[in-house]
Image (cartoon, rainbow, N blue to C red):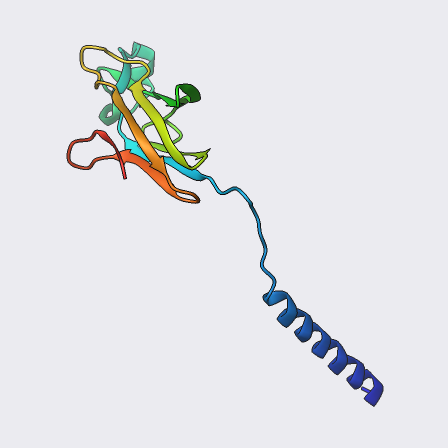
Amino acid sequence: MSGLARLAGALLAAGATAGLVALSGVTLVVESFDGGLVRLSWRAVGERIEKCRVPSEEELAALPPHMRQKEICEGHLAPFALEVRLDGEPIVDREVRPAGVREDRPTYVFHEIPVAPGPHDLEVVFAVVQGDPAIGAAPLRLRTIVEVPPRGVVLVTRDDASGDLVVR
């Protein structure tokens, strides 16, 4: 390698280092929103819904003896409806389905709502969509006034002891 190539390489490395040093001091403003967030975050296990049937003689004959069952049941956990109103206006109205390919895992709620700072009337309803009303869980309801600080987060979650929705 010639002396000229070495000099060019050293100048290029020095220039890249100087550029990196200069850019490391630059402040990047990604978002200028000074509001806060209402974050909904919890997990719930819904009611199990099963459909059972008696297998035909042909189905039983096709199975080894140790796998034959008198009744074949397929099931999943019931989905939930999530409704959120902020200052009387509907913000969220959607179905939250259980996790897992067969929808047999707990349901996870994670939703963030950007809001202006200050007090807000918050109403959250989380209820089972389908299932037997006689054994189904009562809907979870929360209605409260929340004070959202600028660039702050108000967390709505489930209380470990009571299972109710609470604000933290």
